Length: 108
Image 1: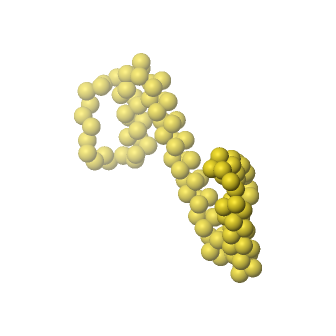
Image 2: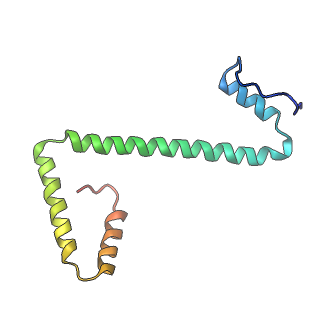
Image 3: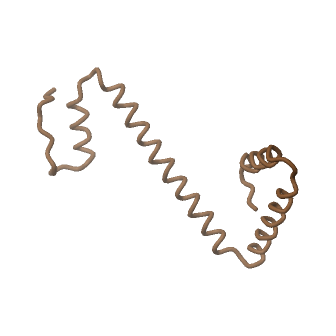
């Protein structure tokens, strides 16, 4: 392994080939850490893209739903905040918020 090869600003190969070359030039004792880093990076990028897609889908559903569905949402939200406002204690409000946040697949 030649660890003294200079890193060039521009490569004539593909990014995948460049990455593989860098891995080949990495000393063996650092490969487990490099593997963890690459896996974490891939997972982070994948989760970020999934979150962005879900956000876009939610916004699209809100913006393109029929008028009746939009009105139902507004009514539900208004009722939720009115009932929330009637709660006596901040602790009760916090518990209610936690319950709402824990529900998956529920839209208001």
